[in-house]
Image 1 (cartoon, rainbow, N blue to C red):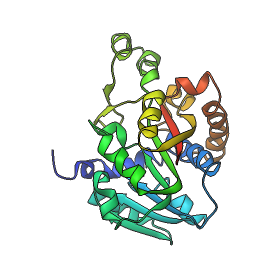
Image 2: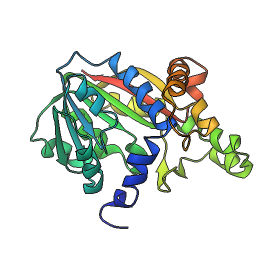
Image 3: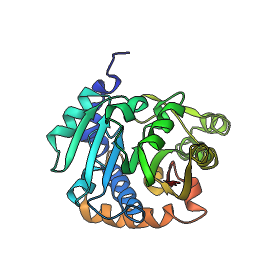
Image 4: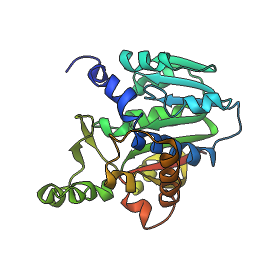
Length: 252
């Protein structure tokens, strides 16, 4: 593997996956979920593994002071192409986040779509909690291990679906190996680090079943889909069947 694992997929990720209807729905839904918990702007936000800034740049445009940290030179280059004001870019691995930002503590720390690419998420979780100020928010989005069989079953891959009931790993949509977590396990991991979980939401339910990843973005249609996804993400039983989940906690 090259040193910059994301170099080969940076264009597909930033210009393809997030530009699709499915990508836009994820950004919209998680933005609304975040705003229910974030302090008012201009609070400081650290986006660990923030890639091209799709989730944190809307916060910068809303007046938040954003620091985007990512280990990938290629992804940071994509971020620079679309970077708004009030954003600082830092190249560093998430496991060294605190040192990379000079020990600064933030009002909110985001880590979305990162833990699934780590065999051991513990060191990054340590850093997320260390970088949050007392009373600061921690926001994590990762794969939902409790619903791993849904996608292969919906695609008619019955052997894969059967195996997924007891599996944590799969090849993700970008062709890279990923692993999933459960809400209960991640909540306990945060509590052990002095962060109290506040709420959790589902991410990607109907859009995953309908396979909108390659659909051309229709703003009006995407808005209607996102409204449904937002409601599904905060209601049982729908959120439990979502492909990913969004967990929000506060450092005590």
